[in-house]
Image (cartoon, rainbow, N blue to C red; front, side):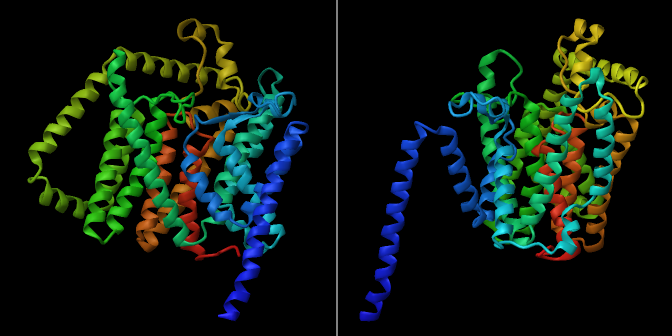
Length: 476
């Protein structure tokens, strides 16, 4: 008894002392904030960075729910402590970009404090496919120097963030943390529940759409002044098509019957909401995934259809006819026809301009400025939106050379993941293949080519690839 009491006293004293220090520190910071707000914020940021250096994986998990919320932005011009600073007030980006920067800084501190370690001879394994992407960045650098209307600073800013930023902060940093199958599986589980939450939000958005006299569809909306998924239905669809393969992966993996049913129901629910976004790109990607799975598992697919379709044939036919009819009517609407016409005109004008600068293009992020200076386009369609295709944007802005380099990078990633699956036939590599293909396929018709919506699924696919190649803890 005496030994136990002696052991607990230091613990109590340390706990009381820690609480006292925290209270005094917090009180001091609140007081100092009134006089030196910027320095107080910097001190808090430093403390947060050091704290998460000891909890790097926890911070990574905390970033996951925000990974696909591109509409949730932080604008430093709105804060009293930064609005008078010309550099800080100019910062404006999605919350997730700031979170991954925090993750990176904590990662650096963890290395300096030797909480984490990297074998310098294996560090190249954190950069799969980077050769082609590095060539693309170099060619983009040349395009920057030759930018439209001498917009060199404008293009250079885009070259650094997001073009260079996405690979380092979303791919390489994620690969360093996801070095075990356990962490990989945990990330997938978190993302699956995030997908269910977004699907529930989509259901609410669909019900809400009936009161606006337009097409009933899943259109994201703002609440409390925030629009985390933006205001475009494609932004919901591109998130859900990334999560749906995860659901079916867990359905195949789970052994408990009740859990399998819950996971299947959640996955089907996400499919339904993705269809109700009326995103044609979302429909195409879902169809592509279905075709790929059918081709890879032709025999099992036929057996599944024979076993289950007759039990639900009436319900399935009613559902399919209703969805197909809705889609066909929507595809023939004036909204879709106008959108198709605008995209076709975009392509023709881009092809015309590319003849002027075929090798290096007009420079990173100059697509909109060039089109806004095109009187014929503006008079018919108004101010330009960004290119609704990663290939159209890259070939226009970085020319044929940059476009081919990016195309080689994307094809290289797909082929490497596919070969890894063919070699082992592991389910997690099949999931990796579907994630990579879905993310790239969606951006052939969308505008999220340099943010987490595309690059984090690529990071997951590449992390699975590296785990299959080199095993766990492969750079430590």
